[in-house]
Amino acid sequence: MIRRHVVVSGDVQGVFFRDTCRRTAEEHAVAGWVRNRPDGTVEAVFEGAPERVQKLVDWAHQGPPLGTVDAVSVREEEPEGLTDFDVR
Image 1 (spheres, rainbow, N blue to C red):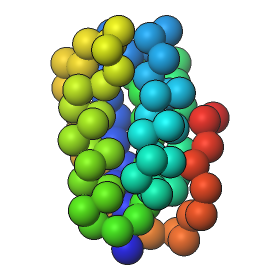
Image 2: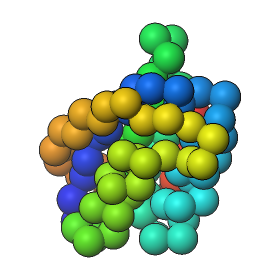
Image 3: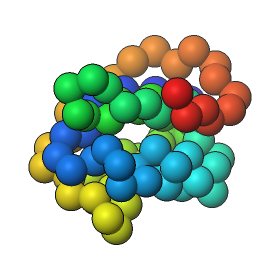
Image 4: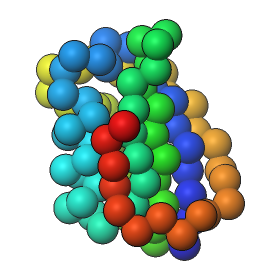
């Protein structure tokens, strides 16, 4: 199990980023959470099998169809054993 903490910037709020992220995470059996930040970015944590987490990190670089991703920062963290995916 691995954990990645991502921050996505661009036109990523008000474009169904969080809901699409949640659905994508559930499709790939990845736990974690996603939330909007006051600065206009979206922050997310993905936990699960390495190949599944990587699919979510790759997805974050594209985002939902209505959004535009300008940059994604990815940081490795120690897994916490999350079991669900939440929109915060």
